[in-house]
Length: 348
Ligand SMILES: C[S@@+](CC[C@H](N)C(=O)[O-])C[C@H]1O[C@@H](n2cnc3c(N)ncnc32)[C@H](O)[C@@H]1O
Picture 1: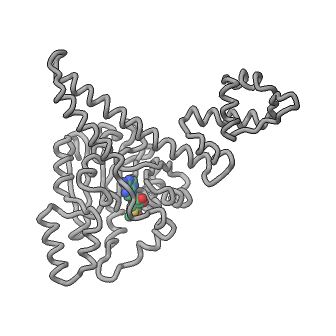
Picture 2 (picture 1 turned 45 degrees about the vertical axis):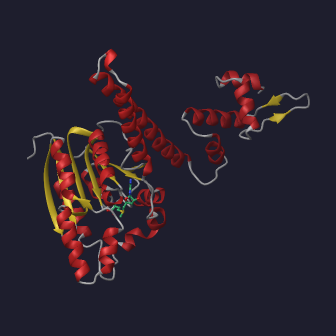
Picture 3 (picture 1 turned 180 degrees about the vertical axis):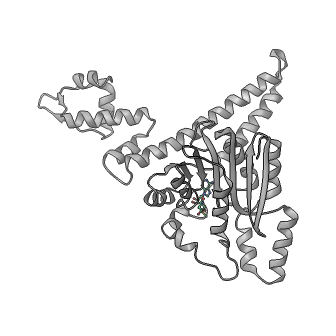
């Protein structure tokens, strides 16, 4: 098939096709008089390239994908979806900021200071959504993660009561068959896979591709999505419940509040959130516990606590209260708690 015919068939231009040829994505056979001819296979390849461009993939990524390097199509689209959600949320933040300026002021009352103040707020949000990075290298931990749960540590067992906590979350949320539950920081799927036999659909979000691979290998039914607490790859109001275990303590207090806003965004109006994680009741409690470990010479415990962002539970509870959630809390041991929050005021 000649280039003009291909362009017509794929609803594109000869210029676009030449561009992909220059970038090495396609190599049509050239006849002696310099006319290009395309086999059916090449037309298929070109059609895939065009579709992937339409989905926003970069040329380099498309080349790796169609040359069969490293990632599968599923992986690439999953990564692409994560990026698009990040961009979408950025746009959403911008629109909301402009809405706020317009709502609060009349035509002639908008001062430069107002705009500067709100644009600062916008910049902070953007920085916060992008600032998180995985300094624990969960990709590297993924293959051995389940085994590591059985290790008790020398003088500090971070996974003390792990099984009890996961069971408590599952028995606390009130989902029924057909409902959708989002698990954030799903890891290898140990928490929400327990919902699958009840007919509940599970979406698992994690920032670690290797954790997600492991989760998919163990529980193919789970809809795994690459993403993170601060930009969930889910549209507004899509899930009946959100669960999370041992994940929230990887983001700091300020980020935790943004994460709660994200959870609230994707949750139905009568939805529920259940979080089991490493946290203290409040700041005083944190200092007391750390002080006790110090006095006992347990530096392993102090360093473990200070290396992560164990939550101040009272901050999370306050956030839920101020956003019209009914909240109950449960303590498993001094630094492991569960928070159950029901949106709206109709808690059982
Ligand atoms: C200790 S593992 C817990 C996994 C699982 N929830 C469990 O209870 O076994 C922490 C998980 O949270 C994920 N995680 C940490 N920070 C995250 C973030 N900001 N966004 C999404 N996932 C995150 C990690 O990649 C990892 O898979």
